[in-house]
Image (tube, rainbow, N blue to C red; front, side, top):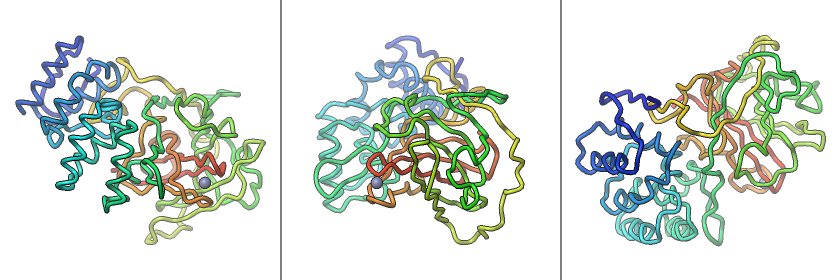
Length: 344
Ligand SMILES: [Zn+2]
């Protein structure tokens, strides 16, 4: 069974719309552990989100959101395109009283109606930072903009020697930066062929590189990308001041951990556990989907717009530091950002 609940006992089958009705019944009666329910909804998001559609209104209007232990990236699939009536219900409640759950659900719906309401609420004093952490940008005028795609691919690591791989892991730094003598980049996690991640904005480079400086603290590496696909003008910003930026991982061996990643659609062949698919063999992250939501996301250093989240992987992809590594794009300024955050 691809559902492995950490709490609450054996999984139940989800093989038909009737099974989904049974699952929603458990949510309504609160007779199963929330985390057990969450792993089932996570499986549904990865396999048959269409079966959940008839229950979008039940979960929203019935005020089950505080008990619906579903992570944001699954919610963005399950609540996508919910009716304008759902949007109005949430907007009405939010105008009366601010609620993280209601705002989160509204953000997950993502329709034109939801974008207008989100922009109005933020301009009326709603929590802009919370939304930006979730990958949603409210420009000075107009509706909210989604700086991520809800279409997800599992990032699967395959160690070994793969010359000419689409998504290589562990390239020499001189292959990915134009000026190796002056670059602050010392480590290449992986390069990703952007065309394999559906829903990304058009970008002039075929691939973007997830890279790291020689530092143990939390950082962001901004770079421009040249016509040859290499980075130039790399600039590191440190997010936490308490670590010595020179205390580094620079002695990690350059030949260590080479391989490639393959991007695979979500489906019943993954393992859904603890709100993610990372216990599936080889899976080290997710391409597409929203950012983690617990950390600030980078704004483009040129135009200041919130950057577009392309993917997030664990450092298991090629060990250097500890935590999550994410890749962001500004499609207007042709900038790329690699970021480091801790485990959540
Ligand atoms: Zn920009």
